[in-house]
Length: 214
Length: 214
DNA sequence: GTATGCTTCAAACGAGCGTTTGAATAGAAG
DNA sequence: CTTCTATTCAAACGCTCGTTTGAAGCATAC
Image (cartoon, rainbow over all chains, first blue to last red; front, side, top):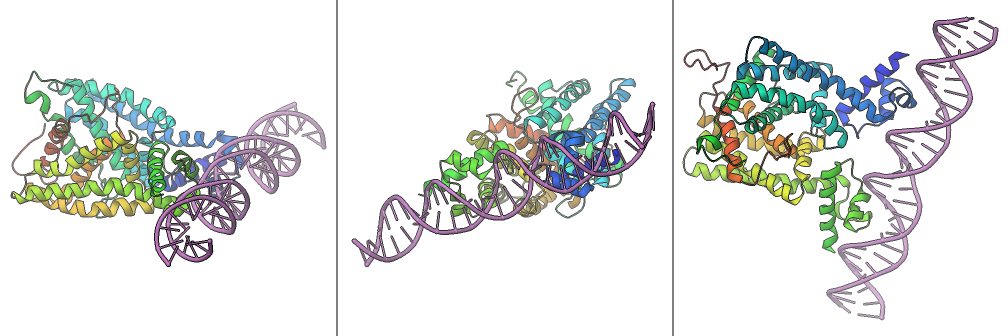
């Protein structure tokens, strides 16, 4: 049955999210899925391929949506910084809510995988973001000509840090979530801090203009 | 010899950082340390206790330095937002450089442990930060009376996200580091974005005066 | 000397791991 | 019915894991 394969992916997603990749055994997964251990080898080959399948179906659509939104804005002329950041952040908020509804532990798992230093993760995540970084770096450069390309890349990485953290930390110390049910309100809240954060003058360019040691 | 215990901790720190906690076996550690496998049980009891020892000696001093710096500023009167953020960020920059010099892979390991969802990590990391969050939340509330306590906590978490990401991602896509050799310059760079980010008006409170849409 | 207490060691324990095998099963096609 | 292909299954493979054991080493105190 094609059902078995599907159920293995679903079970793996749940258990990887709860106990981590190395903390989950194939026997746990197949037991949870009501399948045989050998079914993993039959349908996916290895445990690693199973992980790749799970991550791909989460991560790839995010960046696709980012590009789509940026394209839409650029069709109306050069987008301002608020629009660029909206194109960057909205897919994250959207995906975060989706994943959380599907599996409360999943966003944190994705976030943890993002900062994995294994060769596998570097390939899956790193290469994905190279194109995105370049594309958005250029758009931001047009919107904020007072910043160097290097400073833009650095600040964009800081925005990524915030987003990753939103995924990693679904609850505040108080217990409430950092991202709620109202997507528009969450976007506004993020834009309210990221727009000033990106727009702020470069301390190294403002203090003394000829001092550009990078 | 007390030397054996010390060498096990050092070897574990190197190997945990490189291959992760679950990705490192006690046999790898003791081989690297030139000791016997049973020495871990003798000196630490369990593998988990060994991890706790390593994390504690990294994380505890950071928050101690944060409190110390905030105390110093508050001795001179109510600190402004820039000073509060400096007290928050400087220990991180300082520690990041220290750890990186000691072991290039260590900062990323600490960052990954921070967003671990195991009960163990929740206890080590979460409880550590509860006091810090409360203390700095109050100081920021004094410096920025236009923000609610909830918004302050949310934004401070975003700053934490950036800091964690600095630890996790020691290199930019281009290859250069996000934090360099000049501590003052790195602090300025971080303050340049975090001060506007914290100071920005709350989009949900905005109604009467400043229309600051960018 | 003997005794004491801390430390190391080789060896083994039981368990769990990812993966493989080869037979059993089912369903559609001829 | 038979044949064929796709899928499932119990069982085993070889290996590594964290932990434990009990003896051996080796100082210091008596």
